[in-house]
Length: 166
Image 1 (cartoon, rainbow, N blue to C red):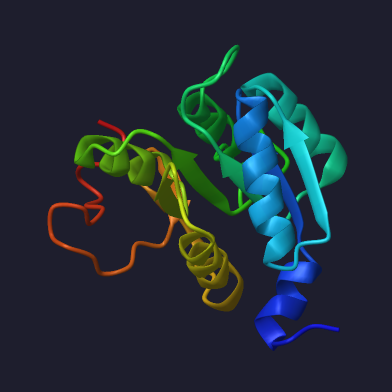
Image 2 (image 1 turned 180 degrees about the horizontal axis):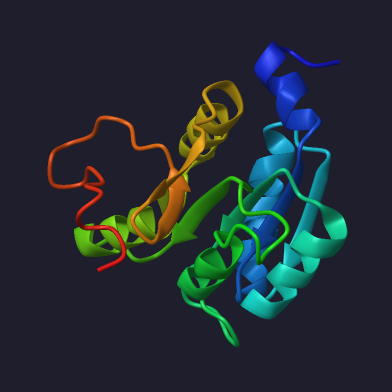
């Protein structure tokens, strides 16, 4: 029995975990299960991720940046292609070891919803899932990019329509 409305929502999510490292997929799966997730599917590379999105219809994707075949940023660019890819509004949490500010900005400009640095905590993962489930942001076209509507952030991280796509 769910403990909260959020836990009930998490239980109902079909979550795709994409990471080239099998151990990291297992750790992420365990954290999600401990948060109440019942349906967690996995992909080991970017091509497998695109196939899983088409076939498994996930509600949320946790995506690593550095993977074989297609990296995380290439996957985001493909997914965020309305009219080309079937699920351009799929919420994406980038879960990566890249902690540089430039990586966060690049990922936001590409269209991710949330960003987490590995290793992450169950609380941080819970908070990002909560943000997506409780306060979903509509997708908008900014320049050449299809991204979640920007929220107010520190000035140097905020998406400026003039910067997107350059």
